[in-house]
Amino acid sequence: MSGERRQIVLASGNQGKLREFQHLLANLNIDMLPQSQFNVDSVEETGLTFVENAILKARHAAKISGLPAIADDSGIEVDALNGQPGIYSARYAGEEASDAENNAKLLKNLEGLQETQRTARFHCVLVYLRHGDDPTPLVCHGAWEGRILEAPSGDHGFGYDPLFYVPSEGCSAAVLPKDVKNSISHRAIAMAKLAEQL
Image 1 (spheres, rainbow, N blue to C red):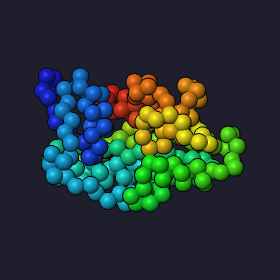
Image 2: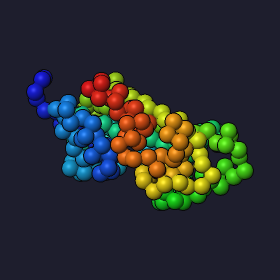
Image 3: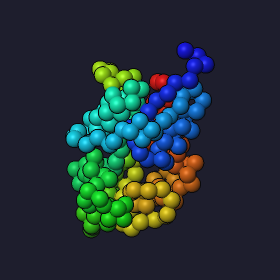
Image 4: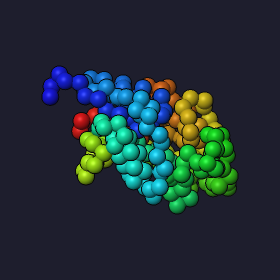
C-alpha cells in the first residue's frame, strides 16, 4: 500500500474544513476530495449525539461516492445549560441562524452567571468509514476546555470562538493566531488521533 495515493471524500461542503484536512493528511498520501465532486447532498442530522451525526454524514457520502469517507460533527457544550447547545450549536438560535445570533442567544441564556459557572468545552468527533456499509467506523474525539465570556472578544475564527475563553492562552479563541488555534483546538486533537490511525 505504501506509495499508493488514497482518495477519501470529506462529508462536508465547508471549504475551510477541506483545506484543514488536506493540510493535515498531506504527508499520508491521501487526497481529500469534497463531497460536492460526487454530487453528495447534505444528509439530515437526525442523531442525538455528535457520534451519530458524524456517522450519518460519513455513511451517506461513502455510499454515494463509492469511496472511503470522513465526516465530523462538532459543537460547544455549556455545563450551566446541561450541555446545550451541543449538537444544535450551528442552529441554536434557529435553522438559518448566523454566528452572531447564536452567540447572542448563548449570552442571554447565561446572563447573571459568575465566571466559575460559565465552564464549557468544544467537542469534535471525526468518523472514518472504509465504505458505505462499514460496520466498524473509526471514531476520534477531541475536547477543548474553556469558559464562556460575558461579551465577544476578537475577530478571528468563527462560530462561538469570540465567546470561548481559553485559560491556557489567556484570551478568546477568536484572538488566537490561526496556527496556535489549529494546534490546540478540539478539531486539532481529534485530527491528530485520526492521522495516527490512518
